[in-house]
Length: 449
Image (cartoon, rainbow, N blue to C red; front, side, top):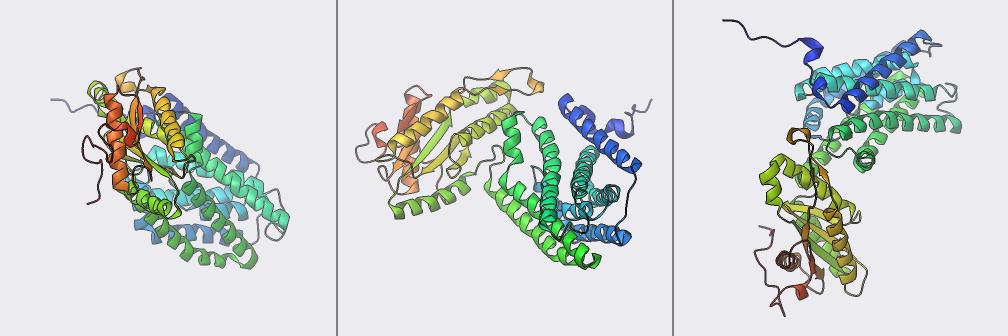
């Protein structure tokens, strides 16, 4: 009997080699550029070293390790629950290094901190080595870019003049742009929607961008304090950074608890809570609002023919289409299955009908025009000719309570189904035998317990 043949060991067993060619190309190119630029900077020499450079390097490295160790449990939970670009807050120290040290020394700080984070957080959270290596390469490039910008100003005026402040701000923007652009590009290339609009939407995600700039700003403040009063002042950054770690975790957990995992929209309970609060404000102000209930037509055929994984991809594409056709302050959720719900507060019009129906028609046409490219396992195929039946209910014409509006909108949606699907029906007037109340075809899609 022969032993099973083992596959090649080492780097050749990494999952990176199974990635699509465009993703693999970007990853390898970024890593090669990071190594190449570092070698070039070393060949040009470190240059004039700042006063107490060894102490600065040691303090930044130690502070980065201490901050990671102090937030170890929090960071592991964040890493496991974070599905988008992960901001580990170590950029406080890497940006400070780029501001205070020559590029090669700043990269040395970044490499030590990334290695420590991998050993203590990433590896234990199941992060593959190739992802950790790519993340490290993006940090190296960001540090070198920021250090190059910092070199445009004399160290003596960097933290003391308006020109120096502008240089620091520019370096901050460059660091964030290099790091986040590269990470988001790979995330989008790995996803089903490889479009530039998806890239911009992910890159400009409000919370992630604010957190990144807040972290880099803390790094700039740490560098300023260390340059002005001494390296020991870096210790003052540790308490607020640890508190920020915990605050970010709370936000992540709250967001995860209220988000539908397949579509990224609000789940039923979170949508109901937010919609109830908005409707109470609308009622107090005497305004208008509209509830739309959307149900994909013949969605079971998609699941039966292509499988539930493809069905989930279709749901995510439809959710993105609905979200793109409404305003930022409109509330969009998934009620389960293939059903979605939208609250449109404050539409123009005498009673809300014209604006609400126009939005519903726009959503219907957008979904009808969707084309969903299938993943490789099912072949080169496209799902199109999707359609949706939409029912709507207006406040105050159809009721003032959310439960009542959902009943009317749900009944109107079923009228749209009976009318041939791919149709919009709005309000009590669309529901047969409803002179004073809606005849619901089934219970309301969601009721609070």
